[in-house]
Amino acid sequence: DDIPGVSVANLTGPTTGCLHDYQLTPEAMRTLAEASVFIVNGAGMEGFLDKVAAQYPDLAVIEASRGLAMIPAEADAERQGDHDHGHEGDGPVDAVNPHVWVSISGAIAEVRTIAEGLAAADTVHAEAYRANAERYIAKLTALSAEMHAALDSLPNRRVVTFHEAFPWFAHEFNLEIVAVVEREPGAEPGAGELAEIIRLVRERNVRAIFSEPQFSPRAAAAIARETGARVYPLDPAVTGPVHPDAYLEAMRRNLATLKEALAA
Image (cartoon, rainbow, N blue to C red; front, side, top):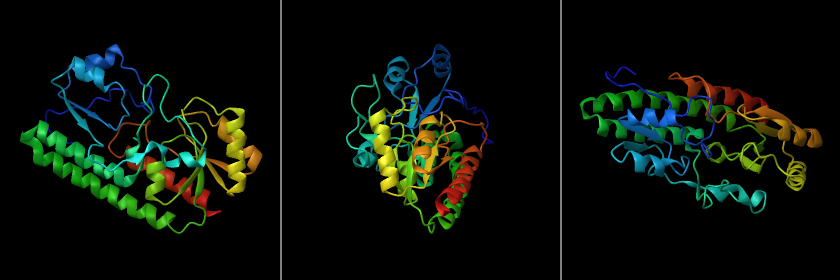
């Protein structure tokens, strides 16, 4: 906001999407070389952190999700059988679901952690970081109340999501994720897995299938054609414009979508 001497650079750019398979570029490494602080989500989202730590051992890293009670990556596995929640080339299977920010309460916790990390890195402006964080948290708290008021009484709670970005959101708003279309974005389900999702959608009377604006809705549309469910866009807020209220605006669009999708 208005703190002197501070600039923010988005290392990956506002169109990258989820960072599971992101590889550091020479340009990104040059950006890091000039940075005082590196803010990351953590919880295994950024698989390149070991490389950063090795090359820039003195760079202060703020892991926004540090200290949170995490949701296991396998939290919704029983709904589709056993699946590998890791990503090709990543090594071990992920232990937790790192998409903390998709939950409003998770975003609030991350804002507090970021503010405290910045306060520690720049003690002269510590109170200014904390004051800015509290102003933003007030907006997030109001948004959470608005979303609960609109969603808590809607009759349909069962949904199918595009990939595993939404368990945190589902936990916060008491939604049941019956199935996930693409465990790994860009890897469409095989015929057997598609048939199983279709079976679950019919069996559980799922009315809404959520695609993500960052990826093709083709597989979700195929499920909808076979089941009569409708496809709606739901944004995990990983791409879009870079301005202070972008996350709030993305979540309000999600709220409008959910009110339509879950009311029928």
